[in-house]
Image (cartoon, rainbow, N blue to C red; front, side, top):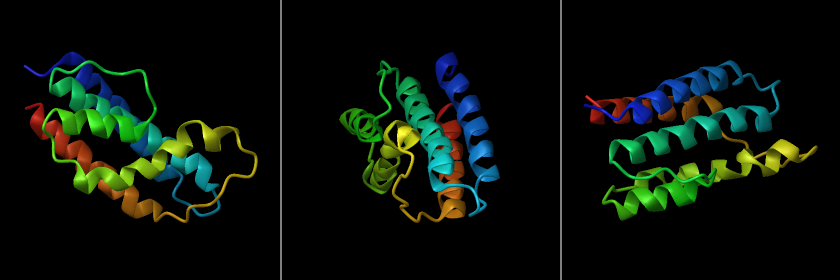
Length: 124
C-alpha cells in the first residue's frame, strides 16, 4: 500500500503544476511561474522519498532532495537540470527584479507531468 504522505504530496504537486500551466503566458513574470514549478518539483521529489520510506527533510533545496534520492539508489542524472528551480523557492520570491532564466515554460510543465506519472507508477 502506498504511503499516505506520498499520495498527498502527489495530489498537491498536481495542483502546483496546474497553477504553473496557467502561468505559461510570457506576460506573467517568470519568477511567479518558476515558484509554482519549484513547489511542484519539491513536492514530487518528497513524494518519491516518501514512497521509498525515507524521512522528508524540511528543505526547498532541489539539489539536496536529489542527493537523498541518489543515496537511496535512484538514478537522478536526468533530473539534475531541475536544480535550477531552487532559486525560485526563496531568492526570486523576494527579489523585486529577479534575473530571467528564459526557461521554456511549456516544456518544463510537460516534464513535471512526466515525473508525476513516473512517481504515480511507483505507488501502484
